[in-house]
Image (cartoon, rainbow, N blue to C red; front, side, top):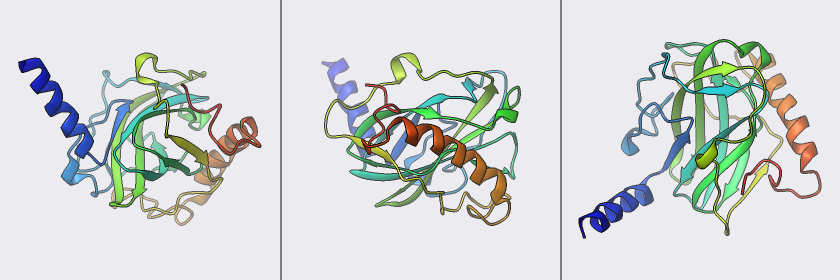
Length: 213
């Protein structure tokens, strides 16, 4: 009885959330603070406990309560504010509510061997929302995060837009918005990812090869 009640409360909490970065684990989740850049009100602590992500290919698992989302992904080797974020893949649009895993993300090769921060931004019906995770960038590729890399079995789609993000990364970023302060590194990283990922799903329109079911 108690277990059922606790499960119900946990489910209700998730259902009311904007979105939560499950993997890499979020630096902190506060639903009311999510509109606050750069990290949804969380203080990011980058230390030895940060998980490793592979620069050539890595996965991110997200729970979203919104029927539609527009997702931007940025990364930095800055470990303290102000962060100097680089866009790492083109914008991804999604439809459907629940947990999904994007397993075709990548970071600049020269990030390998350094610690930093992954920033995820959702431009949704509730406005622009932010989450961050402390990470260690390592060489190589890994397209799974074991039990975290799952997707809704029905009613969910995601597609690459091929476009760079236009959302503000936050006052703690040296790039006030994509393409202003330092466009070359952001655009090249996102473009490289687009060339790889879009080519793998050409003609399908969906992230068939970029989602793990």
